Amino acid sequence: MLEALAKPKLLVLLGPTAVGKTKLSLDIAQQFQCEIISGDSMQVYRGMDIGTAKASKAEQELVPHHLIDIHDPSYPFSAAEFQERVRNLITDIHARGKLPFIVGGTGLYIESVCYNYQFTDVGMDEAFRNEQEAYAIQHGDEALHLKLRDIDPESADRLHANDRRRVIRALEVFRVSGQTFSEHLAAQKKESPYELCIIGLTMDRALLYQRIEERIDAMMEEGLIEEVKSVLDSGCPKNAISMQALGYKEIVRYLDGELSLEEAVTLLKRDTRRFAKRQLSWFRHMKDIYWVDVTDSANFSAHFQMISDIIAGKFVHKIEYNQQQ
Image 1: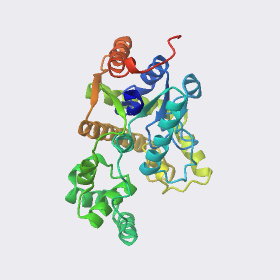
Image 2: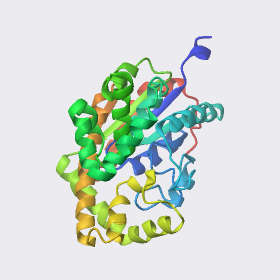
Image 3: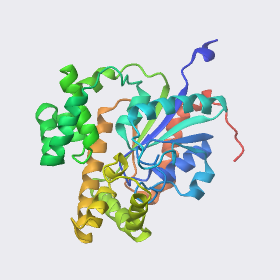
């Protein structure tokens, strides 16, 4: 009877971009009979593989993956849709006798599932939203971002100036409710509907930044420019949400002649470093995270064992999974 009333179990692996989530997630998923749910807001888009650092097709064949390649790049994917889809996936995965495993770095999306945010609490003001869109077009995204910083510096720290849609939404929340977006999020953090095990990966900041720059160099060699051209040629507008992603927005500006290639890559590296810093800031506002320092990348087996021990201590005595490897 007590087991029947227990909350569904949910495993989460989060961390900043380039910290090494993918390799660890595959080994963890195979060890604990998981199905992986992408916790990245941009991996939902088809044709955007290099810039979003998706798991390769071979890696995806090792473990079932969800919420990858489910929308065309012109589609306006949202945190609310992510939350609804993941809730359903968690139910389905448990029904198959597997452990649902969210892996990613989009803090709001992951947290909305873990703590059951109510996205319908704050209404909309379409006229205000259109005014802010026009303001950003006329004065630039940085100017719009400064407006948010004036009223809600915490949200401004979490949101990149390029993320115009979410910056406008944060301004809109304050306009409609009189409450800042960060205050709204803080009030949402209630009891989780799941039995959570959240693992956070961190590493020395200088090493993380080096890994980010090396990853971007590799993306350029793998054909990021051609990928962006292909997405645009497919009919995706330049102002689509997908084209505001890191790696895409900068290359679009290069293709439009606004930046040289060297300038675009330099800007991308800088903005990705800043993004990683914001990711860590977001995660450190979350609770219930078991942090694992993976600075010594050569010691992968020790990191894997440490994470396995955390999961085992939290879940394994209650999980029935196939012991045959």
